[in-house]
Amino acid sequence: MSAILELKETPKSCKDCPINFEDSGLEVSYCAKTGFAIDDYTVTRHPDCPLKITEDNLRWILLKGDLKFKYCCPECKQTESSPYKYCRDCGIKILPPS
Image (cartoon, rainbow, N blue to C red):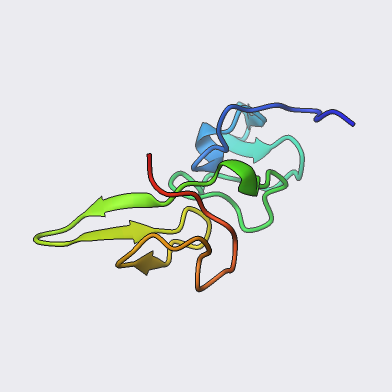
């Protein structure tokens, strides 16, 4: 089975998604798949976004702090002091940062 839409990366926000469209008459942006208005999702994705992150290529996000490094889960945004094999909050498997 092949995907209908293949993306190199899952968009960080609805505004960055290739399947959004803008209704010029109403000046509102919509998701082409769900029909949700996405103007409030310029930084994050809608909670009911049909695009799902695949676990086979997820990596911890390295956050640089004052004196210590922290690692952030790309799915639930939970921070950890060490990059574990699984997120302790949401349970998904995550690779070490690259």
